[in-house]
Length: 159
Image 1 (tube, rainbow, N blue to C red):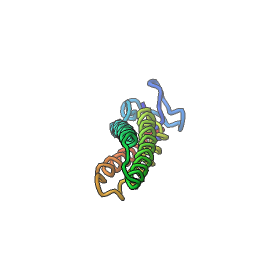
Image 2 (image 1 turned 30 degrees about the vertical axis):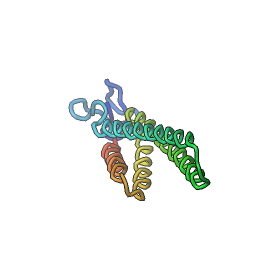
Image 3 (image 1 turned 30 degrees about the horizontal axis):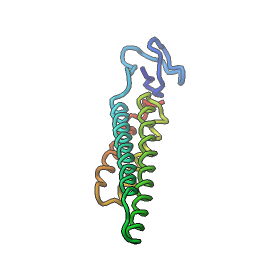
Image 4 (image 1 turned 135 degrees about the vertical axis):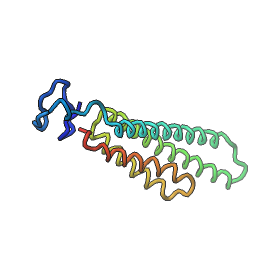
């Protein structure tokens, strides 16, 4: 249960909020459980994290395939080196992004404001990263905007 005034978590038998001292009227003032928008934000953050980690694994596997090839010319060697470094760098960024999304998912699931702050920051980062990309930018922008909107809609229930 959550306080209708400050959003703080309440014991089931509370008559007042221990955080803001608001009197609780059991008949119509108590919100039970986690709000649906926060649940949706948590699940979306988890999906974004899982997809990012899968993308990171794909980048690392691609780097392994590139590394195993034998170049025939100096130009091919240079191309392989650039591709290898690029795949590793993208993989590391995706891995970090994915882990942070999973952390946000966990914190949102527990209705913690730190999960909301992290989720909004990751949503903004997702938009900033996706805008310069011409291919698949909607894949990054739409979930990022949805995550931000869902968190802001349920912001008062986070503590």
